[in-house]
Image (tube, rainbow, N blue to C red; front, side, top):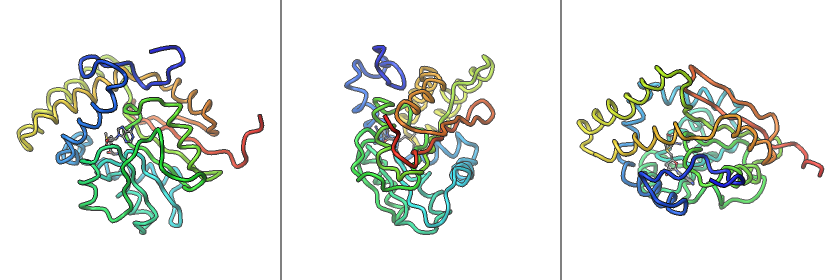
Length: 253
Ligand SMILES: C[S@@+](CC[C@H](N)C(=O)[O-])C[C@H]1O[C@@H](n2cnc3c(N)ncnc32)[C@H](O)[C@@H]1O
């Protein structure tokens, strides 16, 4: 990774050879696991995932009347939580790079769903009150490019919420999480779904968590991209939320 790079983690050669191959690897991985993604998430979060997503959205200020863009919507887990709050499916727009994930999302969501990339959002400036991205920060190509896009499509004063899983700081918690993600969860997924790719997804998930740039760097890049009121909220040393806001007036240069 060059000094100027804002990639969320270095090239992971076990999975792809060059940075340029990351995008196609990630897309193929999520296409291959779309069918089983909700099940894996349910087990991974011990059934609390949807409650947590909704709680995080309301704490970030989601209220009826708002327009929300859910980037990396996947099968629509964050989008569904947002609709529970807004009670208006057209007020939520989901975007994802994986056609497989979007196909699955279409079975349960009537909201507009768009295939696209976080790094080049196909929306006009100043359109959304809130932008969410759940557990996908580790998958984008460049954080700064992505955050500048987020800023662009948010209305002045609009809020950003990114949910993430962080690398636990204690060795014992790291060991427990690694065993859970790399051994127990893939085994359960293989027995219940018969899909071996769920194991690959969990292995990749773990390595991107371990290799992800530190939280302080992510906060710095958010500020450098133009966000204000940037902060990190942490729960149990594992769940992390990055929040920020678009300034009400353009920053004077
Ligand atoms: C771990 S899933 C998260 C899904 C959902 N947000 C959730 O809370 O469970 C990550 C999603 O990010 C999507 N993704 C990865 N890279 C992306 C990118 N550059 N732009 C848009 N979506 C991306 C994947 O296709 C996948 O659906």
